[in-house]
Length: 390
Image (cartoon, rainbow, N blue to C red; front, side):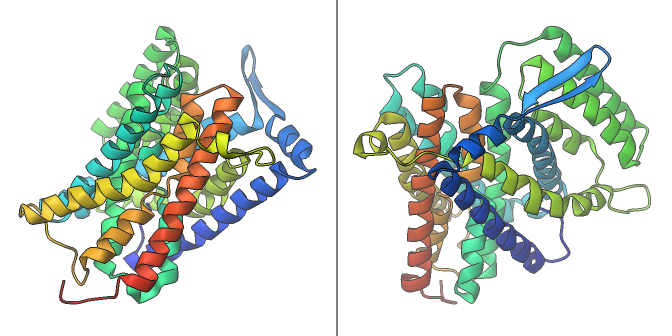
């Protein structure tokens, strides 16, 4: 999800960040299931406050990460989406059609599976979007382990599908996961958006100007009841791709954010959200409606939704099978897209505030993502032989 000089650099970066992400999640799980759980919970709830006169923001540490640092994560996503749709692979229908169709199926089917298991529970139904997400860092980390067994065109398909998946998640969060709205804060946020438009109109290319407005926008959105991370999305879409001389403005910002997002923000998010107490988890917890809907949504819904919609697009002549890839390799990639982790956990934190529901979400995401990742690796490693005749 970054502007890089070559797709090879991108894959190396994402694979490395996936390893760090996994390490952070494992540490969180270990602390949550040992005597260190008291320290873990105390760390997450450590109060932090910023005050400027009468204006103050007071939140526990985990919310500063989920609401604050994740806004920077969404900033990188929006910059990536803007680039891909205006100048990248998604600007051309021939390249965009297959990942677009796959992403639609990969969001629709998991949501339907979740709704099927939770339709009778008015509270649980709020988590319908949790299994619709794909964690590109984890997925590409597994692909990196497979080396040349996965063709470059198929890796590109995975990347583009994840970009569209992220766009879908942004739309879902904006439309369905908001609290009681403060119209004054929304009006102030709208004024900030107006300032960003003016900066664009007058072709202002200094990143500092956009960042200053973006910080105010984040505070306004945070106070409005709309999730604060959407401020990062708006800011990313507002920053121009290039200046009048053709220099990449958004790309320069992206390169400066790369190490912080990939090796700082995402692992921190994993650490504060992956900790789930497994000491008393039994069959009953695994088969309750929320974790079951998430597990099967990620493991079954993702693979069948992406593969069937992609198969239909190819058979109808809308798209073509990625170069040098075969059907079993495409199925293996569809399986890996069932690794929801980061975005699934994030949507889960928006859907539920009750600790019991939050624990159920984490359990479902961890089990579903683990199953999809393991089976995806096995299919691509041992059964999907590379082919140039696909």
